Length: 431
Image 1 (tube, rainbow, N blue to C red):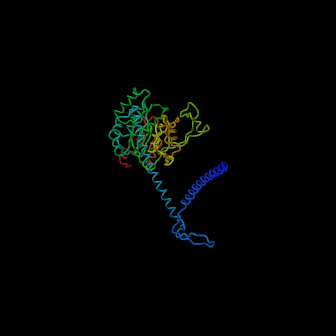
Image 2 (image 1 turned 135 degrees about the vertical axis):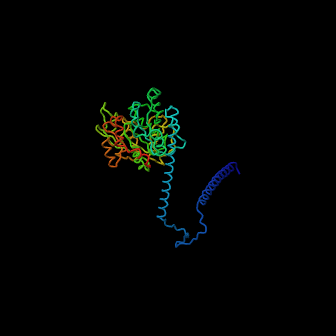
Image 3 (image 1 turned 90 degrees about the horizontal axis):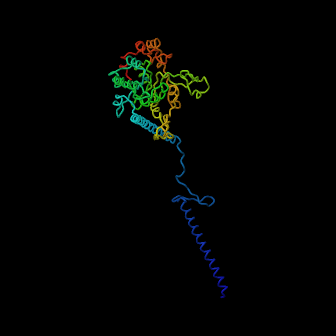
């Protein structure tokens, strides 16, 4: 054989080997693909087979016919799951509310320590680790210049000394005059209040600078401080020139004890005053629409009460806290899940010019029940006297023309004598 023929045979042999190699690889992957398809097919063992009319194999399924679903049973299961889920959400919501209360109390205590809040000694001592439950906390809004007004209240409807302590222990009612401090903290005005508090022990001092234009801020601070110090069902704010029947107030609030979020007072909707220089001028009047519009419904500022949940809401939201509250409100919503979690410490609740308007605005958007009770805003005699004689004793009495009792220092005793419920009523009433 020539060299030429040998080269040709060698080339053919090389090509054949390459094709053989490719064929082997293709067979290998084909086998792998086939075996994988076989493994994915479900095994049908011990299943009887018959031949159909076309001669093809037919599988006979014994006892595998799908049973119709019981719609009623499935519906019951779903309702049961919904009920259990709702119960779990309620339990979580209650737990979260308790944690928010503890957070509010801790933050208030921290602020008092850092800022040196001049809280009276009896309050510091009386705050136990485990708080007892009270019916209501009554905060009497007062000013540095109102010493005679405070004395007129002490001599009429506010129990003093041992009787006040008895009122707290037996009836669960706390009553305090509420005041902040002067612009020059520790000055002569503050020292006068400290001396008065040392004598009577009936003040709640706030970390707040006093001023008529700061009533909204004072109200916010009062509720935040009160809810941190005392665990009560209701928190009441009243002015120091208003006459109050404590037993009637307690009985009135007790009727709403089972409601979670209540806002009680004499509801009104006064005009929004755009004109500068007039009393109750509203600088933000443009927010309420055209000139001549009226405010939303809110309780008049002489006396109103809010439930614990609403007071807690004010406490939590008075400032933007510096850390998140552990509340996933997208999945477990609550009407109080409006807590802000910024880190700048700014005020969150907006303040309008008028304190009662500000309070009412804080509850817009919440699932809070507004209760309009006209016994919380009776007139002075003869109005409250006639109502008392008819068996409808008033909770509070004042003159609308003066936004309180006109010349209250001179007339408070007269109103108390003619419209008061009597001291025995207070001690005999069970709340």
